[in-house]
Image 1 (tube, one colour):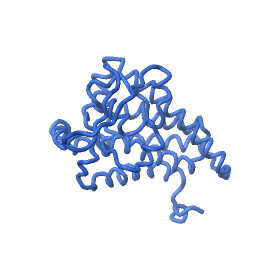
Image 2 (cartoon, helix red, strand yellow):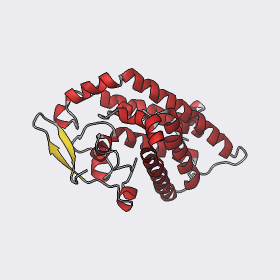
Image 3 (cartoon, helix red, strand yellow):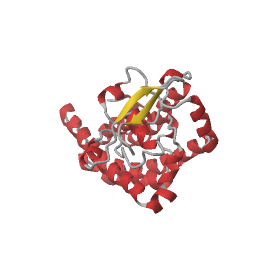
Amino acid sequence: MVFWEAYGISDEVMGTFAPIAVYWIYGGLYHMLPTLDQYRMHSRKESEQQKTQVSMGTVVKGVLVQQAFQAAVALVMFSLTAQPDVKVVQQPLLVQLGQVIVAMFVMDTWQYFVHRYMHINKFLYKHIHSQHHRLVVPYAFGALFNHPLEGLLLDTVGGALSFLVSGMSPRTSIFFFSFATIKTVDDHCGLWLPGNPFHLLFQNNTAYHDIHHQLHGTKYNFSQPFFNIWDKVLGTHMPFSLEKRPDGGYEARPVKNI
């Protein structure tokens, strides 16, 4: 028995609300860190200018709206796929690992093509996706700052497809979606911290996604949240160099002329 069952909480409820809690806890940890100017991807001046364009309150409200939609869809999905008269038996760990890998690939594929199309289609970019790109200087709490329709199409539908195609159980989904949430928050944290395992294990990381958020980089590095396979296959991969700024911190610079 897992600990939440002792409190009468089902796997479905945990799978719905655990990723939301993880988002605010992990994002909060980044928010409580000291200034760490020596590890910033953007100067403090750029970050302060960002706050005058999009307030923290606006970002928090936007994320909460998206998470409300996310929770509603998750509850519906779990209720439609539940088999009340069938006792769910957890698959062996190796099988669950395979399901997670399939889910990662499905999510990456869905998000790449939807994300890229939102840049190609001028109407969708202007009226929907540009909201996320108002955060030219990303930070942890802003990872899910999207137009509600984009949040529904990109993240919520992508997550539902990952769950359904992989065949994972609600319990496995708790860990998968919590991990995906942590990875997404980390990609937007704006810090290049030494020893960060996401920077060591994934080429698609904070600096990789920062290139995409730069004003000149919105035609590149669409892949999220895990790998950069589709960028490399389809020619939208922008390699970069990570260089120290004279005023402290790091800067991700494209190595090709844009």
